[in-house]
Length: 270
Image (tube, rainbow, N blue to C red; front, side):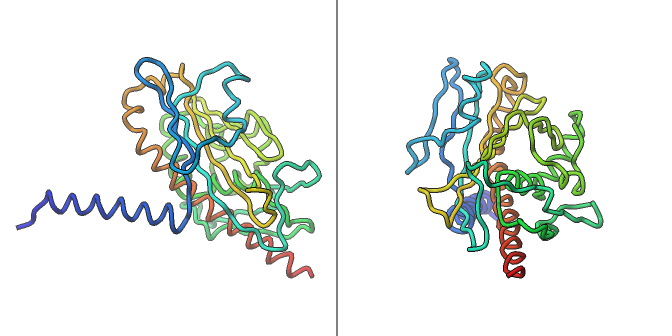
C-alpha cells in the first residue's frame, strides 16, 4: 500500500534539491535581496548569504524619484562570460546596439522557444546591451505563457507576438504586453504595469572584468495599489519569487544564445 505522506515528503525533498542544483550549480542564479512589509507597515530587507549590499539602480531609486512606496522587492543576478568578439555596453554612450538587429522567428506563433532566436549581421553587431537583456526576458517561454494569462484579466498594450516583440527598442514609452518602459539609461530599463508592479533590468561589469557581464533582474509592487493589498497576492509571494527565478534562468539562456550568435557572425566577417 502506498504511503502517501512518505511519497509526498520525498517529492518535496527531491523538488527542493533539484531547484537548488538548477539555481546554484547549473544556471548560477544569485538572489541578492528580498524586501517585504511587516503588518505594522515597516519594511524589512533580507540580504541573502554572501551579499550584504544592493546594486543601486533605477528600481532602488524609484521611491525617492517618484514618491511612491514599493513593497515586495526582490533582486536576482547572474554572470555571463563574453567571447572575444563581443563587447558589452554597460554605461558608455559611445557604444550603441540596435535591439532590432535580433530577429525572432516562430512559424507557428503557437509557442515560444529559445531555439527560435536568430541574428542577422548588420555590420557592427558585436555589442550586447540592456535591450538584448530585456528582449531575452520577453521572448522566454515562461513570459509567453504569462502574457497569455495576463490577456485574460488585464488590457494589454499589445506587442505579445514574436514579430512584434522583435521590433521593440525598449525606449521610454515602448511596451510589451502590459509592461511599459518608464525610465531608460545606457545600462538599465525600468518598466511599469497597470497592476502597480515594476520590472527592472540592468547590465553591469563585475569588478571591471571586460570578459564578463553581470545581468540583474528585479521587481517590486507599489504599496498603494490594490495588488499589494490583496491577501491572496501576499500569500502567493513564494510562488512569485520561484517564477521570477526561473524566468531569469530562461533569460540567461536566451541572452547566451544571442551572444554566441554575435560572436559567430563576427568571426565569419574576419
